[in-house]
Image 1 (cartoon, rainbow, N blue to C red):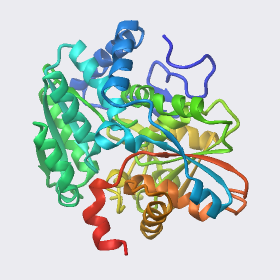
Image 2 (image 1 turned 90 degrees about the horizontal axis):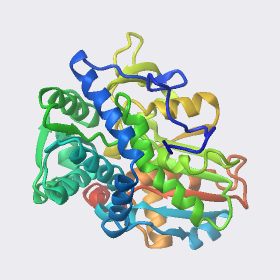
Image 3 (image 1 turned 180 degrees about the vertical axis):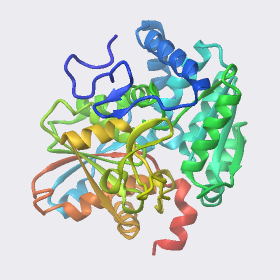
Image 4 (image 1 turned 120 degrees about the vertical axis):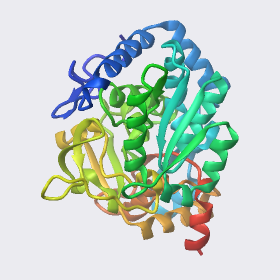
Length: 390
């Protein structure tokens, strides 16, 4: 099946769902058959030209692909680098999440499922799931942490307007980690009728691989659109789906791959090997192996783990990972808005913040060409920004 080109560094995982030392399938026995059935269904669908053709048409006619590659001419002049923005903020629903959800919803329909279950942090994946459910005539249930509901009210309203049921999660940190826990529990109870529409390159096999393949369109488009091969390719990383999709288009080139994490949720930088949400990856945890809470101004990066393929790319040396602070993120939002007229999501602003800090240093020398994925637009963050940015 045509997952990747032969010999690609982001090829399919092993039969056990591993990328090097990471990945796998660590779920209750009751979910093993569901994961195996999903893997078989995805392999079959991904090899079916009719399925791929329908998805391609939806991406074009419904989601608005290809998204633009925009030269950030003002910032480029200010920073002394050539900055190109891959504009996932222009996709339908306002982020890259629609790429993954359309594929998973089509697959769920093909498998005879009638309901989508999803987790969400910033709300963009929840909105995309609610959107796809409305389009395909399915029910949608979205689990969202109580804390994230409070700071992402706009997206909660959007999900409900689209017909989804949004269930507040009050346990733990009341953020994405706990929403994912509850969504997986709900899937166990409804596996015959429901598909768990996971939003990132995390979870048990086949999700990390499947979501990466559905997001690969970002990197493939950007590679074709770029006037020349960039020196650096950069994207924000929480679970890491927009970064994985972007990196997939450039992993077999000499371009440096840079993932940028929230300093308070930097599993690649501060994590150690552990198991969270069904896979082995790098995880923020204490000396006893208990998962530590992540903290970030961006709800979508407020996550204590990272996708297992990112763990593999980082430990193998193919990709590099950096951190930025909340304060740097707020500066980046304002700088991009006032220089280019683009208000990006707080998640995306992490990548922008690293470029602002690194430009003109040995980490990003003057004259470099940088391709940066703007994973989403900032509408959802207005309440947060109104109190923080001046």
